Length: 61
Image (cartoon, rainbow, N blue to C red; front, side, top):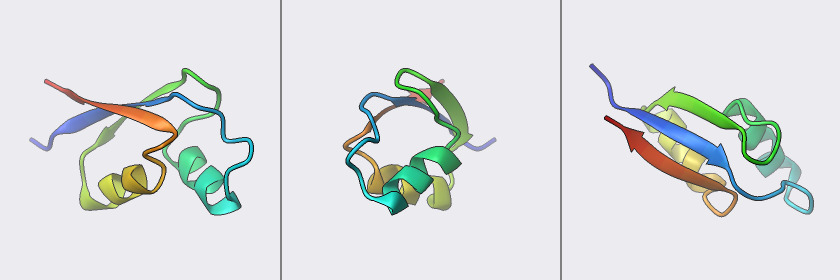
């Protein structure tokens, strides 16, 4: 079974680049404080790295 991670939008996307806004949106996050649970695949981890300054990430056990 693949690891899962919980991603929470901690900061606003106002003032960020359009590419970063699209990345946050594709992770399933809309408003500040919204949470999404994703598989920890290389694609998702790359997206997390791009917007790491806007989100918090924790591993789900």
